[in-house]
Image (cartoon, rainbow, N blue to C red; front, side, top):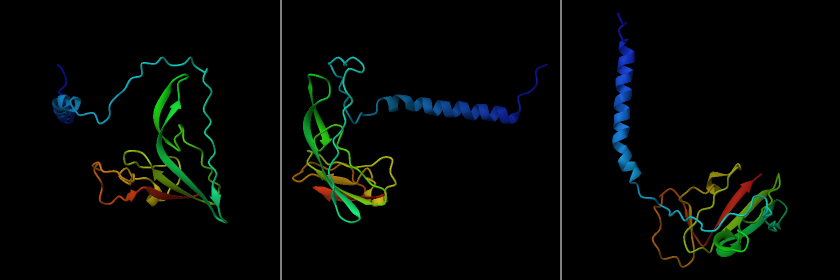
Length: 172
């Protein structure tokens, strides 16, 4: 004679089956979701491994006072040779990829004015730092380029909207 299934195990199995069925009905809807970006596959062959030197970005020069390092960075379109012998259109900081290096010194404040010369609004976000929330680059803290007439993406009313440029402050 087989032992009876405990009530908790039976209820748990029924609940799990119901949850699986509910998720299963949503899969076709999730699969049909609209893609926000377009995947563009390159027709160019990749270079042989370790044949292309690692790009070393230039160090941007800061304007300094007694306590602060000031930088100005412009986001702009340019072309660059990423794969040998081929140019690629990029949107880069100072028109290069990767962008320039900014040096932040311990005990000094770093102030960066980001100017947007791209054809669309942009957001700046710094990874890996202890950043004040006002300078963190919330996803809807847009820098709208001068002369932009297109529609803005969804804009959070709690976020900030800057025209042409925005100043970010970092303390180290």
